[in-house]
Image (cartoon, rainbow, N blue to C red; front, side, top):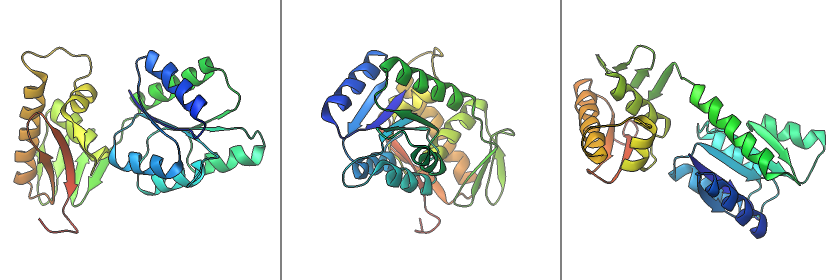
Length: 229
């Protein structure tokens, strides 16, 4: 599970990073809201933890910008303020949970696990990028025409569409799509084979989106609809 942590207090940032890392999470720590926005735009995260009072761009402003981009990653807000109005403002901005400082690390970990469970149970019905629509329930990909996907192809396409325009490593794709399942042979080869399958199917429906990247590296789902191929 990848976590983006934005907290400007160096000591607290380091302490939270250490606790989360010890629990097996991968953490990208940043120290202001602008850096949080930049990381969210380029990386794939399962949960984000933002302090509200940060330099350059505060946590709520950063959250609003991230939500406006279409990113639905769960966000937990941290703040030293306990007033009702601050909690309401954060939740209205798109936060999924709220934790007031000072807090116990055990409670923060419980909140993270809660968001992890909620995200795991979330299943979108339809996803759209450019002229391409993915029906998750029907495992059907369509643009000028349509084609059915295998379960694995559908999971991979869903993850790519949820993280369009972001660089996703082979390891990240394997972790999110295959999970703990065992595969025969090399995981890198497995990812490459299914990327190839999806590329062929996108071509067959005359899609205006495409998967860029080379075997063993990172892959990006690009939207060419407004740029031209």
